[in-house]
Image 1 (spheres, rainbow, N blue to C red):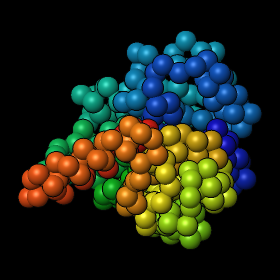
Image 2: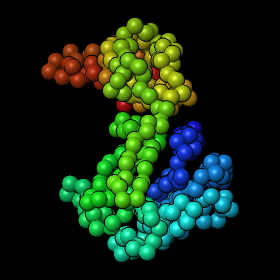
Image 3: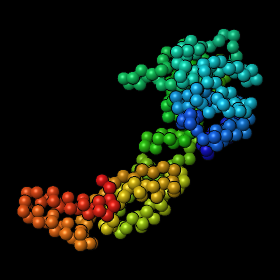
Image 4: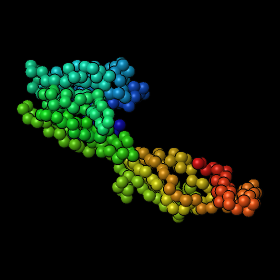
Amino acid sequence: MRAFRRVLREAQTRECHAVLIAGDLFDSPRVAQRWVEFALSVIADSRLPVIVIVGNHDPAERHPFQTARLPSNLHFLPATDRLRLDALELEVVACPAGDEPRWAAALRRDPHGAPHQIALMHGSMPTAGNSGAIEPAWIAQSGLDYVALGDWHSPQDWSRGGTACWYSGAPEMIMPRQQLPAVMLVVEVAQGQPAQVQSVAIGEARPPHNAPDGILHWDVSAYKDTASLLEALRAWLTPETVARIRLTGRWQGDAPLNLESMAEMLQPYCLWLDLEGAFQSERLQPHTPFETFLLERAQAHAQQTPNQADLYYEAAQTALYLLRGGRL
């Protein structure tokens, strides 16, 4: 929510003439009504022309905007079409997801059109070994001033010929393991000149300050129980923290570390969290008559078959671990 607001506010601050959203405004067509109303409210409050096409995550036939009452400054283009905004001397070619057969013919400059002509497309460029829905040659042949691409999650330059062409990426970190930049693009189009594209950092998500690669290595050897370990980890988290925490060292607590449960307890204190177990557990000692009996049986079998002693001791330790709530 904050990221979306920042995009519109940044556009206002920079006195942008329009905002382009090249699909996937929503991650799914099944969106709670409050999220749709929030998006429409932020767009309406901006008072900027906002042009939205559909993506593969919010397809045309089920897009939340199809049945919503749209503000007058929102231009929603669910099918391949051309939009002319005479007040801006701007013409927009919409090439949304799901309408790929019509893209090649539509992606062209109209010699009788507006002075500034751009396009929005939602699809993939070719990657190594894979064809994409978009042909790079289309960009060079289009004669357009700028093509705004949607679908990929990182900013990438696919400019061809005299046409600037970019994926903007996402304004907030949506795939933390990839550590992608969270930006918006500011594009300046002037008649007869190449479009100028500037990347503007817009995301709040941050790794912990002592984990520049996004992985925080945490030695568990100093803690005697899960509660004290959780308390120490919480002190490093903020609502903007995105982190992979790798637990290292030797765990000496009697109760096993349940990473799934710990992650659930820590998640409310940060934006995104992943716990990795790279620690060793100290040998568990029996606390009950049943646990004592279990270890005695393992020892007896180990003495009878010395070549499998390590297997029996490991099995006994695994049994104690599971009995105390551990997970494999």
